Length: 193
Length: 193
Image 1 (cartoon, rainbow over the protein chains, first blue to last red):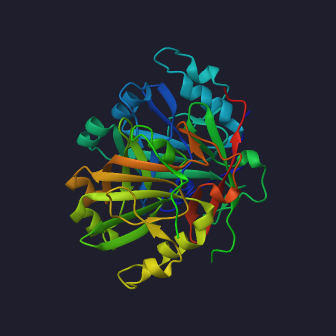
Image 2: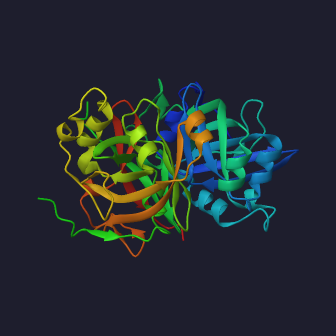
Image 3: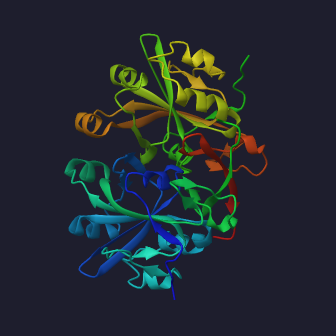
């Protein structure tokens, strides 16, 4: 059983901070009960107040038409704790494996009134409404979303600050290079202020 | 004196890997001898073969008109070694401090035939030609560039792979949250393949 005691709501005007570290994202969407989830390294904040973000979702991904039809997508910010599940979700397409999500080993849930699946083990979860930009979507596979709700793991995120110093290193964000090469985030750089 | 023995040319079709980790970028441009440089956390790969990337550059930045007039910008991928210099470059605008670059403490150089300043101490350097998208630039401050040349630090990057395991932790990438809070990249996650 999954509990949500560790999640707190985040102001959509501050939610970009969950993405600033540049971690790989876990993009998901839902339409008429059909769900999709895929890692996307090319996700990036675009604006604040409220948070907007870009996400590059190629045309062959199962999740893309779910975003196009529903007008919504979610970005989870995975931690090292679910690296294996994330790697599976990025290695298999639901176009070939209808049971992809179930077989990933991840635990899924939803938050608020939103029905896209979210994977347990993320630092944060952001829900985006698509701002339609047909040229960007067609020419660049680039989607723009505006954050309508967000949640974060309060063990790491509180008062809109991120602090990994007191938690298991498994709760740090996950950064992708290529192939099966992922890095965890390291320590804060001290002495800058 | 700065030497370039540690830099190797990178295939623009592979250069996105230098940005995949999601590190803060160091954006620079030059026009008619006028130079600007600013950290930009909101930079992200957009495509490969060749690498394209997005960069969010707000209208009040000194560097923005240099990009608009020249049609080019560079993205450096800074390491922890230049965290202080980068923090200064992000805290001061050349609109108020014409000697900003000189006062940053960073060491600058250029590569190839490109005249934008590059700061010593980056994992890689990517040169982009702007793909004009006036709507994106005006509505979202979003610039799209296509990589025309790239270089990387061969101590970390070789055969298009990134390996920090044998180098000083200061050569790892820098990841920004907010305020003066930066993190260095940690270790590779093993056992995924």
